[in-house]
Amino acid sequence: MSLAKLESIVWLDADAEVENAALAPLSELKIFLPLAGLVNVAEELTRVAKNMEKIEKEMGGLKGRLNNDKFVASAPEAVVTKARADLAGLEAKLTELETAQSKLKKLK
Image (cartoon, rainbow, N blue to C red; front, side, top):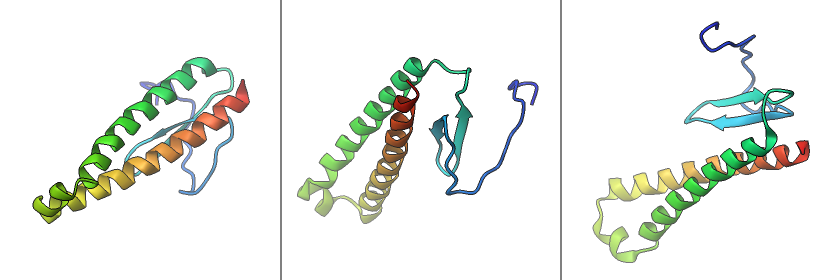
């Protein structure tokens, strides 16, 4: 833990909520970082907003493909299924980031 300069690591239940913490959602892992005295809230809000913009852009591309009847009809089923799964994953990440953003705004 000295490499990351962490005081501790705490494993929580999957549905646990953490107050006053930044969220970094990974594929099957959520990392919560306590903010009290550690993070500039304005900078963290900017970071979250940038991540949200990136995800929204990716979602736009996937939605465009999936709303294109020609793509859905001609693409291999595995490609269409993967695009739908990717879209669902991005939607979940966006929801998590929106929640983190609202929590950060309460800290201002």
